Length: 132
Image 1 (tube, rainbow, N blue to C red):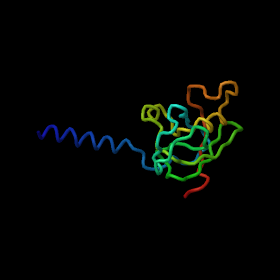
Image 2 (image 1 turned 135 degrees about the vertical axis):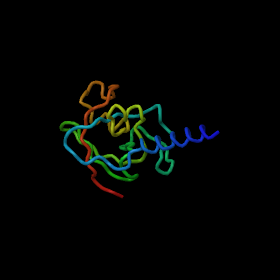
Image 3 (image 1 turned 90 degrees about the horizontal axis):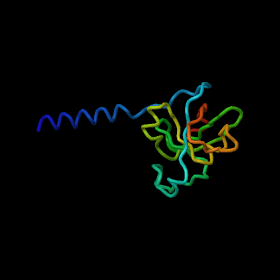
Image 4 (image 1 turned 90 degrees about the vertical axis):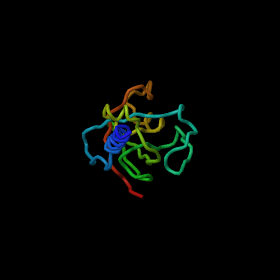
């Protein structure tokens, strides 16, 4: 019994340590951005449970407060997005993805104009534009 409790406590400590607690500093060198789209349409977002709309200019981030407006840049393209959800998925965070954009925001930034929702993450720079 004590062993099970110890394992549960260890797991809880590891899980809480994995959650980022502060935003990355605004910097010009790129980080990675992924997107989420139609497969998540209508699902409740973490910010007040509103349904997700892929065509909205929103994003998911573990690092910024809900309602924060972020300026996201990829090359010469820039888009403003609002943090409305938590993400990206931990499997992506482990690969260096910092932000999960709505499909529309990702398509506006994508360097691939023929296939803007290409499967891989894209390099972006992120700068907080407005805090709630």
